[in-house]
Structures are given as structure tokens and as C-alpha cells.
Image 1 (cartoon, rainbow, N blue to C red):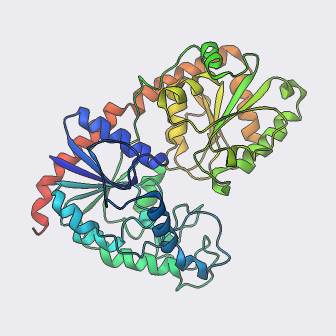
Image 2: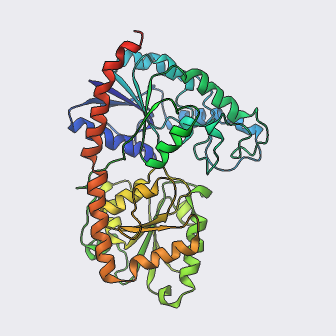
Length: 422
């Protein structure tokens, strides 16, 4: 069986990392799987670029052109929105590769035209890394449920008109996909429920398969040794916040982190005890306001080093207002470090409240601060939380288990081949 994954890139962002890990897991299971991307970062013969001319400059140019319709919406917010109106040239390239199954991942930034799906003539599996596949164009809906009908008057666009860009995007998808035999995979229960309620996917098969990772790479190591390697203080309770975003965007929750830190700092018990560790681009991490000692570590690409960072800290906070699952949370727990997050969207699939972390009331900075303190204040409880976090990650998020479920799903697909024309 030949599976072809489509992803905007092979390394940039959480969705690309999830796709790359799954590709590795499937290859261990003996699946012939290649990845077709717009921009390739790795030297890997199984990762193909859509064009020899692909480059960071051309990709940014295409991305900018795809965004031009958004200029008509000056009141739009900063959450991502992809019109996807440019032709993509993917149909012929995919046909030449002759896959048995096409597996879609994150295809934003103008990578894939919605109408292309109806012309692929192959079984399609689509893993949802955000809500774009079933909305009129937004990647983060922040509670908006207009996708359950047909979008329009989009709050993300700051629009009050029903016949707006989101309605047009929804209509294009509806017309193109109504007869496409598509299997949807959601990384979390929340994402699956959202897809099933959507007007575009409510008649499609929707499965839940959690993202996986190598639990031998992401594993507990000696905390003090990890701190020495990373030059982090040994006498602090270290709180980690990690972001891959190069800019400060509201749905990532940096404002909530700052408010929670204010609450903690007001308590003299924590003023000298807590240290804040910030991982991610300096343009973002450097903007965090904190009264605590702060230790920026920059962007970390090496998985072994990232695993050491998780093991070095005492607690990881995930503050997003919306997450399909949160790889940061899964990675941290695999390293035996409890997670504090909000009880919303995909996080309850990862964190079990007061068992391996803490789920704060959405989106309450005071309860978030309480959760951080609760995790680290009692040494005996903390040890139990760490052991439970590692156990949950191995049980629910091991890459071998994820790849096995996808392999079984893909092997059902050729039986459907008769529903497609040659």
C-alpha cells in the first residue's frame, strides 16, 4: 500500500511535526508512505516538494497573494484565516505518484484549493489539526458555531454580512465535497464532536486517533542533571511556557499567563520560589511580563534537547484558548512533568484533572494560578502526579499505537476503490 501525505511543510509548526512523526511510525509498520509538501526542510527522499522552484520566498509570496481577499475586512481579528483561492497544480502531481490513499494534514497558507479534493479520484483520509476543513476559512473559531449551518457574518472577519468571505468559502467547500468519499480523523474528542456537528462533515465518517510520539525520546531524566545541561537554576520551582508562534496572538493565551503570574506573585510564598522558563521565538517570549526570574531558552528544534527541557522543569502550562489536542502537553507528560491547562477544547483528552495535572476553569487566570501552585506545593503529591503523567502518555499517546490504528484504517480504504473512477 502506498500512502501519500499532504502537508504544507515537513517541520514548521505542530501539525507538520505530528505528520512527520506519524510518517515515521507508519514506516516502522511497513507502510510505504511519502509526504508531499510545499516547502521541504529535511533531506529525506520520502519527502517531496510540489515544485523544484519551491522556496521560502515563493511560499511567502503565494501566502501573501492568498490573503488579498482579507483586505476587504479591516476589522478582522488576528486569528488565521485561509481563503485558499489560488490554483494549486496538485491534481496532476498526485496522479503521477499514484497513491492508494491520500492523507491530508495541514494544507493552509494557500497550499490546496478546496476544489482539488473532488478531482483526486483516490480514497481520502483527513487529519484535522484545526477547524479550517469544516469552516468558511477560519483556523480558530473561538466558540463560534456558525460552521454548523453555513458560516457568514463571520466574527473572526469582523463581518456582519451573511454573504461574506466565510460564506463564500463554506459554499465552495460544500459544492466541491458533497460527493467526496472522505474519512475524517480527529486528534481529540472535542475536535471530533465539532466535525460531526458541522454542516460539511456531519455525513462523513469521523474517527478519533490521538497524535502520538516516541515515548523513548520523550522520557523522564534526572531533573537536576537536565537543569545543569540547560543552565537552569537548581533552586527554583520552574514553570515552562512553550510557543512556536513568532508573534503574539490572543488565542495562544499569553495574556492569561501574565494575569496568572500576577496572582502568584502577589503571594509572598511564591515570589522567590518560582522561576519562569520561556521556550520559543524571542519576538514572542521576550514580550512576556513577569515579576519572577525569567529564563528564555529560545526555539528548540532538537527533540532530545526539548525532552530534557520538559524533564528539567516542574510544571508546563498550556494556555491556548483552543487546541486540537496540544503536543506540548503530550510531550511534557511523556517526560513525567505535569501540565496545567484550561478545561476546554482538546486538553481534557490529555490532562486528567488532579490525577496527572490540573484543568483550570476556562479562562480564569486565578484558577490557573491556583493550579500551578497546587501542582508544585506538595512534594509527595507532586511525585504521584509525575508518575501518573508518564503513565498516561505511554498508555494513550505512544507512536506505535497511533501508527497501528492509522495502518488499520488505511487498509480499509482500497476496498472502497470501486467508488472512484480511474
